[in-house]
Structure formats: structure tokens, C-alpha cells
Image 1 (cartoon, rainbow, N blue to C red):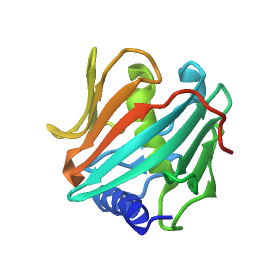
Image 2: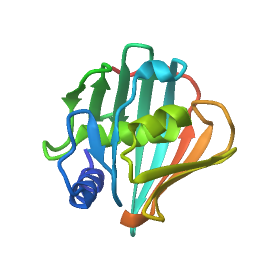
Image 3: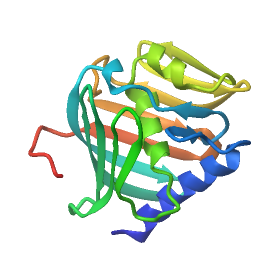
Length: 191
């Protein structure tokens, strides 16, 4: 497990925790830059499974992670692996609670990772239902922005209109983090 990747996740956790005025309730996450997001039902999106390569850049640090996401009407599973296949994180959401199976550090809030995925992939109507009142979602065909007090706190650019997207770029400008995400060809899932 790479120390830099763990530190990258910890920095996201710390940035999102510091940006919150109140402690989020279970199933909700404080977002980097302001506001909070509460996880929405998995039935809000068509079931899918995808493996992705994630190129994460935080300020001057760059790391690669392979992710597996599986969503059906009852559950949302997220697995993060090093490029060599070592499991870093395994988190599930059963539409009631977040279940942490593996995390690199106990200080890491697993809900923030699931929240970032939902904010990027779930339908706009569902996302809006999970956002705190201070947040605004703006969406065009190939772009989605989450705004808090006229400041963009998260922006997604999509290459296509299918879910999961073949490629997308997620920017978290308040913490200077960018995620370049590309879907990989179908392979056997790692559990």
C-alpha cells in the first residue's frame, strides 16, 4: 500500500471535515469547500458494474488507483486497489448504513468516497435530494457543478452521456484535487 495514496485520502478527509460547521449525521458527508451530502438510494440509478483507473492529483502529488464499483437496487460497493492489486479500501452502502470492510486509516470517513461517486454519477434529481440547502447543482450535457455560496466546490466533465461514463474528470478546486477517471474493459471483479 502506498503511503502517498493513503495520505491523499487522509487529506480529502481532513479538508472535508474542516470545511463542515456541524458534524454530519450517519450516511452524510461534509464536502470539501462547504455543505454536506447525504447518500441516496441505490435504486435511483440503473444497476451497473465498472472497473476504473483513477489518476488522482493533489497539489503536486500524483497517484494511481484502480476502482471497482458495483451498484444494484439493494447495495453500492466500492473497492479501491493499488495498480498492483492490493486492496486499499472496501466500502458498502446498503441503503441504510455505510459498511466499512477495509480502509487504510481509521480516521478516513468512508462516506465521503461514496458521496463523491454519487455526486458524479447519480441522476441530478436524486443528487439534489441529498444536498444540504446551501448547495446548488448546475448541469449541462457534459458537465455538472456543485456550488456553495457562489463558489464551485466540485465540478465534473463527462466524455459521454452513459452511466458509468467512459471517462470523466472530477475537480475539487477548494482543496486543489483532480481525479481523471477512465473505465477499463470488463474483467473479473475483485472482492
